[in-house]
Image (cartoon, rainbow, N blue to C red; front, side, top):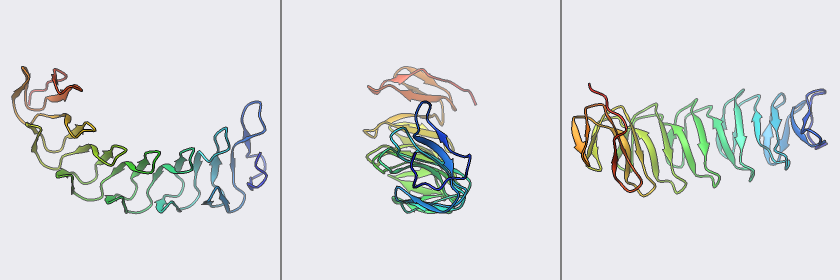
Length: 209
């Protein structure tokens, strides 16, 4: 057990068969592994003693990210922030993330997921306000919701629906905005168009509107 962590009596949980601390509720403000926690926060550790899953008692800034009180945060074993809920609208790596958004990061610190605070354009694509957007480890756009219809990879994709991309930028899937035929597969308006790794259209779903 880490004797340097001030815990409320009776709150300490250890790993089965080990004295190593799994979690406890803090009895005082404390800085643990470089992160400041308020009294009443529940701090959790992995079996190697690294901060893992915690619940913060008050708004806390971690690595420049404002995290909301009484929500769960999670860390990578390296100490980097994996997940939190934003206490305020925040620009993260050039993206305006909405207050209350669940934000997730790749293990190298690049943004993985957040909700968009306002309609914006990312890599030339119009992204709808209040919807979640996802990125690959290299920062490339992975998935998003269109704020208006547009042609992507030769497919007319419907406004207000989800678009998925592959890491090389090719279209992986979208919802058809009109009756069309792709690689011999017939899609009605509203049909989900899905492409395999080699770029071949898959007869995945069809919806008539």
